[in-house]
Length: 128
Image 1: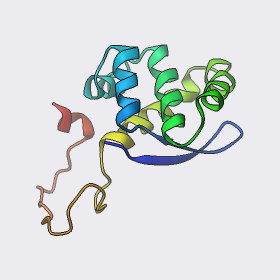
Image 2: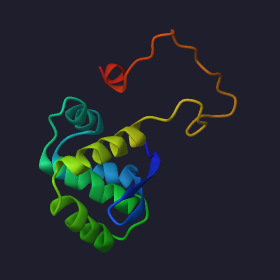
Image 3: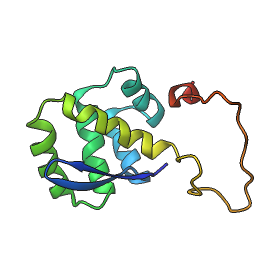
């Protein structure tokens, strides 16, 4: 669980990644694990701290220093309407939890591809 995403945000293009250390920090700060946290976003039940902290720790996971991450979050999360960042936080969490189809990330070369039925499951259905 550590997908890197790069997005245009604020004043430039930034990398966001939630690795093991960032997950642990989110667990402690928000008192919630990865799956329930993603569900909050999927059900539109997120909290203000969820949005702020997901973006902050993901900036650090993407290569920003903690000081840079705090400055960016102050400018582009705290000083902006919350609705501008909910989608980004959700994409960060989804990217950290789900490997894109066809990607070899986290798979051994010899692992056969598992066929699924023709109806795709949403991430929410996968979590239930």
